[in-house]
Image (cartoon, rainbow, N blue to C red; front, side, top):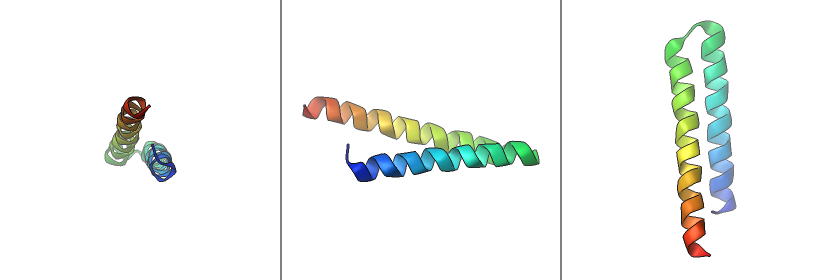
Length: 57
């Protein structure tokens, strides 16, 4: 997995976490759900990249 991919996935995860916390603080369930979705996407991308890396080695 390239360094750029790792950084982007980390940024996506942090952004999702911030959205979730903001949504929770404001009582905005839609924003909170969007944040959780963003975090899940970042986790899935990381898992896919890890699988690709395992087959490269």
